[in-house]
Every structure is written in C-alpha cells, then in structure tokens.
Length: 93
Image 1 (cartoon, helix red, strand yellow):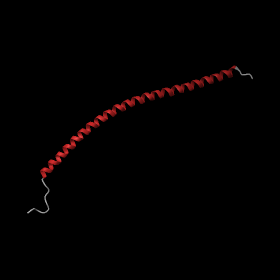
Image 2 (cartoon, one colour):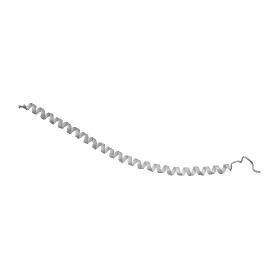
Image 3 (cartoon, rainbow, N blue to C red):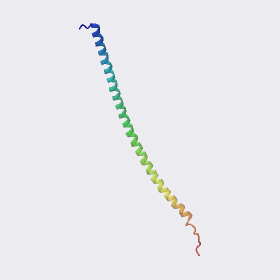
Image 4 (cartoon, rainbow, N blue to C red):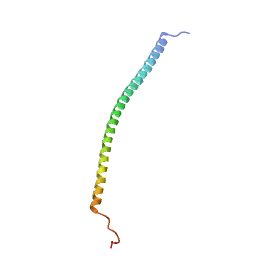
C-alpha cells in the first residue's frame, strides 16, 4: 500500500497538535491545582488566626459578663433592702 508523504505529514502534524493540546491542558490543570492548594493554605492560616482572636475576645466578654452578673446581683440585694419586707395582708396586733 502506498502512502504519500503529504498524508504522513498530516497524520504527524495532527498527532503532534493533539499531544500539545493534551500537554497544555495537563499543565493548566496542574497549575490551577497548585494555586488552589496555595490559596487553601493561606486561608487556613488566616482562619486559624481569626479563631485565636475570636477565642480571646470571647474570653474577655465572658469575664466582663461574670463581673456584670455579680454587680446585678448586688444591685438586686440593695434594692430589696431599700424596699423592706413585703406588707402583710393581715396586720399584726
């Protein structure tokens, strides 16, 4: 069977083009995976720092809330002392 050089050149060119396209897509996918991994690492670091800051703020708020709760209890006691005992329905003789 006779195959001309033009047909062989066309098949070779098509094969080379196909290999180049597949290699380009592979490179693009690998590059995007690497960038996504890098972005994920950066986000993990930022999230960790934000969690630490949030934990610290929550701890400070809990301390302030405890102090506030103690002060409210003291105010309730002081108001109860000012009001005195509740009046009785039947007066004592």
